[in-house]
Length: 108
Ligand code: SF4
Image (cartoon, rainbow, N blue to C red; front, side, top):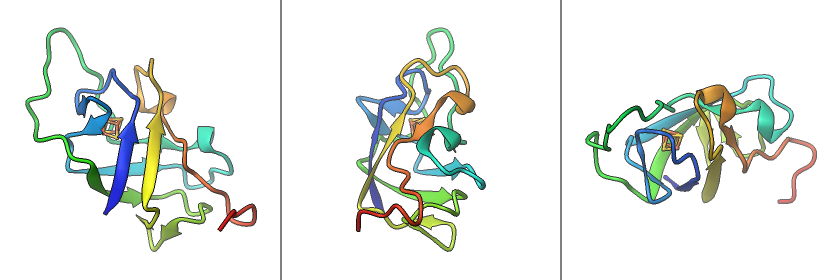
């Protein structure tokens, strides 16, 4: 499990920077930098829609297709904590995994 901090306030799953989805999928198979990744689980919050989908949780399972990320192990994120960014996002393309760390430029 990964500790998640999400700034995508416009997502229906977001509550106080936590995610209520239960698990998320990060996309960006050819990504070489954070802004080429995205949270594919993003769903735009519309109208008076509230988060009635589940309980927000600090820890979450992250399926990840950003295969060039150093934290990607067999399509799972193994980072202790990540941040999903995109405060004004209206689509998943406007979100990103801010913790993406390209293989070869690793700080570990
Ligand atoms: S953008 Fe992704 S991580 Fe953030 S609340 Fe929505 S589904 Fe969860």
